[in-house]
Image (cartoon, rainbow, N blue to C red; front, side, top):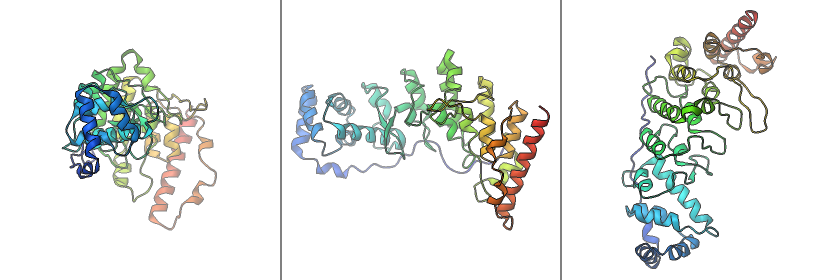
Length: 342
Protein backbone atom coordinates (compact mmCIF):
# COMPACT_ATOMS: atom_id res chain seq x y z
CA UNK A 1 0.00 0.00 0.00
CA UNK A 2 1.38 3.40 -0.97
CA UNK A 3 1.75 5.74 2.00
CA UNK A 4 -0.98 8.33 2.39
CA UNK A 5 -0.11 11.99 2.15
CA UNK A 6 -0.40 13.86 5.41
CA UNK A 7 -3.74 15.58 5.66
CA UNK A 8 -6.97 14.96 7.47
CA UNK A 9 -10.40 14.40 5.97
CA UNK A 10 -11.95 15.23 9.34
CA UNK A 11 -13.80 18.54 9.64
CA UNK A 12 -11.56 21.55 10.23
CA UNK A 13 -12.19 23.17 13.60
CA UNK A 14 -11.05 26.75 13.08
CA UNK A 15 -12.35 29.69 15.05
CA UNK A 16 -15.11 31.70 13.41
CA UNK A 17 -14.93 35.47 13.74
CA UNK A 18 -18.08 37.03 15.16
CA UNK A 19 -16.80 40.57 15.64
CA UNK A 20 -18.83 41.83 12.67
CA UNK A 21 -22.08 41.14 14.56
CA UNK A 22 -21.48 44.35 16.55
CA UNK A 23 -22.52 46.22 13.41
CA UNK A 24 -26.07 44.91 13.54
CA UNK A 25 -28.32 47.65 14.95
CA UNK A 26 -29.52 46.88 18.47
CA UNK A 27 -33.13 47.59 17.44
CA UNK A 28 -33.01 44.87 14.78
CA UNK A 29 -31.63 42.37 17.26
CA UNK A 30 -34.34 43.40 19.70
CA UNK A 31 -37.05 42.84 17.11
CA UNK A 32 -35.72 39.37 16.32
CA UNK A 33 -35.49 38.35 19.96
CA UNK A 34 -39.02 39.60 20.66
CA UNK A 35 -40.27 37.84 17.53
CA UNK A 36 -38.78 34.54 18.71
CA UNK A 37 -40.24 34.96 22.19
CA UNK A 38 -43.68 35.67 20.74
CA UNK A 39 -43.42 33.27 17.77
CA UNK A 40 -44.05 36.27 15.52
CA UNK A 41 -42.70 35.10 12.16
CA UNK A 42 -44.02 38.20 10.36
CA UNK A 43 -41.89 40.51 12.50
CA UNK A 44 -38.79 38.42 11.82
CA UNK A 45 -39.66 38.32 8.11
CA UNK A 46 -39.71 42.11 7.99
CA UNK A 47 -36.12 42.22 9.27
CA UNK A 48 -35.01 39.46 6.91
CA UNK A 49 -36.48 41.33 3.95
CA UNK A 50 -34.21 44.28 4.70
CA UNK A 51 -31.31 41.87 4.23
CA UNK A 52 -28.52 44.16 5.41
CA UNK A 53 -26.81 41.49 7.53
CA UNK A 54 -26.47 37.74 7.70
CA UNK A 55 -28.77 37.17 10.65
CA UNK A 56 -28.28 33.40 10.40
CA UNK A 57 -24.57 33.72 11.11
CA UNK A 58 -25.46 36.10 13.94
CA UNK A 59 -27.68 33.37 15.45
CA UNK A 60 -24.78 30.94 15.15
CA UNK A 61 -22.43 33.39 16.86
CA UNK A 62 -25.01 33.65 19.62
CA UNK A 63 -25.04 29.86 19.91
CA UNK A 64 -28.82 30.00 19.50
CA UNK A 65 -30.08 27.05 17.48
CA UNK A 66 -33.70 27.97 18.22
CA UNK A 67 -33.20 31.45 16.76
CA UNK A 68 -31.48 30.02 13.68
CA UNK A 69 -34.34 27.64 12.89
CA UNK A 70 -36.95 30.30 13.72
CA UNK A 71 -35.31 32.65 11.20
CA UNK A 72 -35.30 29.90 8.57
CA UNK A 73 -39.00 29.30 9.11
CA UNK A 74 -39.66 33.05 8.98
CA UNK A 75 -38.17 33.69 5.53
CA UNK A 76 -41.00 35.18 3.44
CA UNK A 77 -42.01 33.45 0.22
CA UNK A 78 -41.14 36.53 -1.82
CA UNK A 79 -38.72 39.44 -1.55
CA UNK A 80 -36.01 37.85 0.57
CA UNK A 81 -33.46 36.55 -1.93
CA UNK A 82 -30.54 37.90 0.09
CA UNK A 83 -31.81 36.10 3.20
CA UNK A 84 -31.99 32.81 1.29
CA UNK A 85 -28.46 33.25 0.00
CA UNK A 86 -27.15 34.19 3.45
CA UNK A 87 -28.80 31.07 4.86
CA UNK A 88 -27.16 28.89 2.20
CA UNK A 89 -23.75 30.40 2.88
CA UNK A 90 -24.12 30.04 6.64
CA UNK A 91 -25.05 26.38 6.24
CA UNK A 92 -22.03 25.84 4.00
CA UNK A 93 -19.79 27.21 6.75
CA UNK A 94 -21.48 25.10 9.41
CA UNK A 95 -21.40 21.86 7.42
CA UNK A 96 -18.07 22.15 5.59
CA UNK A 97 -15.81 24.11 7.93
CA UNK A 98 -17.31 23.30 11.33
CA UNK A 99 -15.55 26.03 13.37
CA UNK A 100 -15.43 25.03 17.01
CA UNK A 101 -17.60 27.95 18.09
CA UNK A 102 -20.32 27.11 15.57
CA UNK A 103 -23.47 25.23 16.34
CA UNK A 104 -23.27 21.72 14.92
CA UNK A 105 -25.47 20.81 11.94
CA UNK A 106 -27.06 18.08 14.07
CA UNK A 107 -28.18 20.65 16.64
CA UNK A 108 -30.00 22.59 13.94
CA UNK A 109 -31.64 19.56 12.35
CA UNK A 110 -32.71 18.30 15.76
CA UNK A 111 -34.57 21.59 16.23
CA UNK A 112 -36.45 21.28 12.97
CA UNK A 113 -34.17 22.61 10.23
CA UNK A 114 -35.40 20.95 6.99
CA UNK A 115 -33.20 18.06 5.92
CA UNK A 116 -33.22 19.21 2.28
CA UNK A 117 -32.55 22.91 3.01
CA UNK A 118 -30.52 24.49 0.15
CA UNK A 119 -26.78 24.89 0.81
CA UNK A 120 -24.17 26.91 -1.11
CA UNK A 121 -21.75 24.77 -3.13
CA UNK A 122 -18.18 25.15 -1.87
CA UNK A 123 -15.94 26.73 -4.51
CA UNK A 124 -18.79 27.19 -6.99
CA UNK A 125 -20.69 30.10 -5.50
CA UNK A 126 -24.09 28.71 -6.38
CA UNK A 127 -26.84 27.47 -4.10
CA UNK A 128 -27.30 24.02 -5.59
CA UNK A 129 -26.63 21.45 -2.88
CA UNK A 130 -28.44 19.81 0.01
CA UNK A 131 -26.78 19.05 3.37
CA UNK A 132 -25.91 15.46 2.41
CA UNK A 133 -24.08 16.71 -0.68
CA UNK A 134 -22.30 19.48 1.23
CA UNK A 135 -21.07 16.94 3.79
CA UNK A 136 -19.01 15.21 1.07
CA UNK A 137 -16.30 17.74 0.24
CA UNK A 138 -12.63 17.55 -0.67
CA UNK A 139 -10.59 16.68 2.42
CA UNK A 140 -13.58 17.57 4.62
CA UNK A 141 -15.80 14.49 4.45
CA UNK A 142 -18.11 14.26 7.46
CA UNK A 143 -19.04 10.60 7.85
CA UNK A 144 -21.10 11.06 11.00
CA UNK A 145 -23.19 13.83 9.46
CA UNK A 146 -23.89 11.76 6.34
CA UNK A 147 -25.02 8.84 8.49
CA UNK A 148 -27.09 11.19 10.66
CA UNK A 149 -28.81 12.68 7.59
CA UNK A 150 -29.52 9.24 6.15
CA UNK A 151 -31.10 8.31 9.46
CA UNK A 152 -33.27 11.42 9.22
CA UNK A 153 -34.49 10.39 5.78
CA UNK A 154 -32.30 12.58 3.57
CA UNK A 155 -32.65 11.99 -0.17
CA UNK A 156 -29.50 10.12 -1.24
CA UNK A 157 -30.45 10.76 -4.90
CA UNK A 158 -30.33 14.55 -4.42
CA UNK A 159 -28.09 16.23 -7.00
CA UNK A 160 -26.26 19.53 -7.52
CA UNK A 161 -26.07 21.52 -10.76
CA UNK A 162 -23.60 18.96 -12.12
CA UNK A 163 -26.25 16.29 -11.42
CA UNK A 164 -23.81 14.63 -9.04
CA UNK A 165 -25.12 12.54 -6.16
CA UNK A 166 -23.27 12.22 -2.87
CA UNK A 167 -21.88 8.91 -4.16
CA UNK A 168 -20.47 10.69 -7.23
CA UNK A 169 -18.78 13.21 -4.94
CA UNK A 170 -17.33 10.51 -2.71
CA UNK A 171 -15.81 8.81 -5.76
CA UNK A 172 -14.60 12.12 -7.15
CA UNK A 173 -12.59 12.81 -4.01
CA UNK A 174 -10.94 9.38 -3.99
CA UNK A 175 -8.50 11.07 -6.27
CA UNK A 176 -5.10 9.63 -7.23
CA UNK A 177 -3.66 13.14 -7.35
CA UNK A 178 -3.94 13.34 -3.59
CA UNK A 179 -4.93 10.10 -1.91
CA UNK A 180 -2.69 7.06 -2.30
CA UNK A 181 -4.04 4.68 0.29
CA UNK A 182 -7.30 3.35 1.61
CA UNK A 183 -6.34 4.82 4.99
CA UNK A 184 -6.34 8.36 3.61
CA UNK A 185 -9.57 7.75 1.71
CA UNK A 186 -11.34 5.93 4.55
CA UNK A 187 -14.04 8.59 5.15
CA UNK A 188 -15.11 8.42 1.51
CA UNK A 189 -15.32 4.61 1.64
CA UNK A 190 -17.44 4.83 4.79
CA UNK A 191 -19.74 7.34 3.12
CA UNK A 192 -20.05 5.18 0.01
CA UNK A 193 -20.91 2.13 2.13
CA UNK A 194 -23.55 4.11 4.03
CA UNK A 195 -25.12 5.45 0.83
CA UNK A 196 -25.20 2.05 -0.88
CA UNK A 197 -26.73 0.42 2.17
CA UNK A 198 -29.35 3.17 2.40
CA UNK A 199 -30.22 2.72 -1.29
CA UNK A 200 -31.63 -0.75 -0.55
CA UNK A 201 -33.51 -2.07 -3.60
CA UNK A 202 -32.47 1.07 -5.53
CA UNK A 203 -28.75 0.32 -5.17
CA UNK A 204 -28.33 -0.46 -8.88
CA UNK A 205 -29.99 2.85 -9.74
CA UNK A 206 -27.57 4.73 -7.49
CA UNK A 207 -24.56 2.88 -8.90
CA UNK A 208 -25.53 3.74 -12.47
CA UNK A 209 -26.90 7.24 -11.92
CA UNK A 210 -25.45 9.60 -14.55
CA UNK A 211 -24.31 13.16 -13.91
CA UNK A 212 -24.79 15.90 -16.52
CA UNK A 213 -21.76 14.62 -18.45
CA UNK A 214 -22.89 11.00 -18.42
CA UNK A 215 -20.47 9.92 -15.68
CA UNK A 216 -21.56 7.25 -13.23
CA UNK A 217 -19.85 6.92 -9.84
CA UNK A 218 -17.53 4.31 -11.40
CA UNK A 219 -16.59 6.35 -14.47
CA UNK A 220 -16.17 9.40 -12.22
CA UNK A 221 -13.62 7.37 -10.28
CA UNK A 222 -11.74 6.42 -13.46
CA UNK A 223 -11.63 9.98 -14.79
CA UNK A 224 -8.57 10.87 -12.71
CA UNK A 225 -4.89 10.04 -12.96
CA UNK A 226 -1.55 11.74 -12.29
CA UNK A 227 -0.83 13.39 -15.65
CA UNK A 228 2.86 14.16 -15.37
CA UNK A 229 5.85 13.49 -13.17
CA UNK A 230 5.26 16.70 -11.21
CA UNK A 231 2.02 15.27 -9.80
CA UNK A 232 2.26 13.95 -6.21
CA UNK A 233 2.87 10.21 -6.21
CA UNK A 234 3.28 9.94 -10.00
CA UNK A 235 6.11 7.41 -9.97
CA UNK A 236 4.61 5.38 -7.12
CA UNK A 237 1.23 5.23 -8.85
CA UNK A 238 2.64 3.73 -12.04
CA UNK A 239 5.32 1.64 -10.35
CA UNK A 240 3.04 -0.13 -7.85
CA UNK A 241 -0.15 -0.24 -9.89
CA UNK A 242 -3.77 0.73 -9.43
CA UNK A 243 -4.44 -2.12 -7.01
CA UNK A 244 -2.09 -0.44 -4.50
CA UNK A 245 -4.18 2.75 -4.45
CA UNK A 246 -7.44 3.87 -2.90
CA UNK A 247 -8.69 4.31 -6.45
CA UNK A 248 -8.27 0.58 -7.08
CA UNK A 249 -9.93 -0.37 -3.82
CA UNK A 250 -12.85 1.94 -4.59
CA UNK A 251 -13.29 0.34 -8.01
CA UNK A 252 -13.45 -3.06 -6.33
CA UNK A 253 -16.00 -1.71 -3.84
CA UNK A 254 -18.32 -0.52 -6.62
CA UNK A 255 -17.92 -3.68 -8.67
CA UNK A 256 -18.68 -5.90 -5.67
CA UNK A 257 -21.74 -3.73 -4.97
CA UNK A 258 -23.03 -4.51 -8.46
CA UNK A 259 -21.72 -1.77 -10.75
CA UNK A 260 -21.60 -2.82 -14.43
CA UNK A 261 -18.03 -2.19 -15.54
CA UNK A 262 -19.16 -1.60 -19.13
CA UNK A 263 -22.13 0.64 -18.36
CA UNK A 264 -22.25 3.89 -20.34
CA UNK A 265 -24.12 6.76 -18.77
CA UNK A 266 -26.37 9.28 -20.47
CA UNK A 267 -25.61 12.99 -20.38
CA UNK A 268 -28.02 15.90 -19.93
CA UNK A 269 -28.72 15.96 -23.67
CA UNK A 270 -29.68 12.30 -23.70
CA UNK A 271 -26.49 11.15 -25.42
CA UNK A 272 -24.78 7.92 -24.40
CA UNK A 273 -21.33 8.73 -23.07
CA UNK A 274 -18.15 6.93 -22.07
CA UNK A 275 -17.68 3.76 -20.05
CA UNK A 276 -15.21 3.54 -17.19
CA UNK A 277 -12.41 2.21 -19.39
CA UNK A 278 -13.05 4.87 -22.03
CA UNK A 279 -12.67 7.53 -19.33
CA UNK A 280 -9.32 5.99 -18.43
CA UNK A 281 -8.30 6.11 -22.11
CA UNK A 282 -9.17 9.79 -22.28
CA UNK A 283 -6.93 10.31 -19.24
CA UNK A 284 -4.08 8.48 -20.95
CA UNK A 285 -3.79 6.10 -18.02
CA UNK A 286 -2.33 2.74 -19.15
CA UNK A 287 -2.23 1.30 -15.64
CA UNK A 288 -5.93 1.92 -15.12
CA UNK A 289 -6.88 0.78 -18.63
CA UNK A 290 -5.09 -2.53 -18.06
CA UNK A 291 -6.57 -2.88 -14.58
CA UNK A 292 -10.13 -2.43 -15.88
CA UNK A 293 -9.65 -4.76 -18.86
CA UNK A 294 -8.40 -7.46 -16.49
CA UNK A 295 -11.71 -7.09 -14.63
CA UNK A 296 -13.88 -7.46 -17.68
CA UNK A 297 -13.99 -4.01 -19.24
CA UNK A 298 -14.54 -4.01 -23.01
CA UNK A 299 -12.50 -1.20 -24.62
CA UNK A 300 -14.15 -1.58 -28.05
CA UNK A 301 -14.54 1.79 -29.72
CA UNK A 302 -11.43 3.32 -28.15
CA UNK A 303 -9.79 4.42 -31.43
CA UNK A 304 -11.72 7.72 -31.89
CA UNK A 305 -10.74 8.74 -28.36
CA UNK A 306 -7.06 9.15 -29.32
CA UNK A 307 -6.05 11.82 -31.81
CA UNK A 308 -3.75 10.62 -34.62
CA UNK A 309 -1.25 13.38 -33.81
CA UNK A 310 -1.18 12.78 -30.06
CA UNK A 311 2.59 12.19 -29.95
CA UNK A 312 3.24 15.73 -31.19
CA UNK A 313 1.80 17.12 -27.95
CA UNK A 314 4.80 15.99 -25.92
CA UNK A 315 8.42 17.08 -25.85
CA UNK A 316 10.55 13.98 -26.29
CA UNK A 317 13.65 15.92 -25.21
CA UNK A 318 12.35 16.27 -21.65
CA UNK A 319 12.07 13.56 -19.02
CA UNK A 320 8.43 14.38 -18.42
CA UNK A 321 7.63 14.29 -22.15
CA UNK A 322 9.34 10.92 -22.59
CA UNK A 323 7.37 9.45 -19.68
CA UNK A 324 4.11 10.67 -21.17
CA UNK A 325 5.00 9.28 -24.59
CA UNK A 326 5.94 5.96 -23.01
CA UNK A 327 2.62 5.87 -21.15
CA UNK A 328 0.64 6.68 -24.29
CA UNK A 329 2.36 4.02 -26.39
CA UNK A 330 1.94 1.46 -23.62
CA UNK A 331 -1.77 2.24 -23.39
CA UNK A 332 -2.29 1.83 -27.14
CA UNK A 333 -0.40 -1.47 -27.01
CA UNK A 334 -2.74 -2.69 -24.23
CA UNK A 335 -5.83 -1.59 -26.14
CA UNK A 336 -4.73 -3.21 -29.37
CA UNK A 337 -3.95 -6.42 -27.52
CA UNK A 338 -7.40 -6.46 -25.93
CA UNK A 339 -9.04 -5.78 -29.30
CA UNK A 340 -7.16 -8.62 -30.98
CA UNK A 341 -8.37 -11.02 -28.33
CA UNK A 342 -11.93 -9.99 -29.11
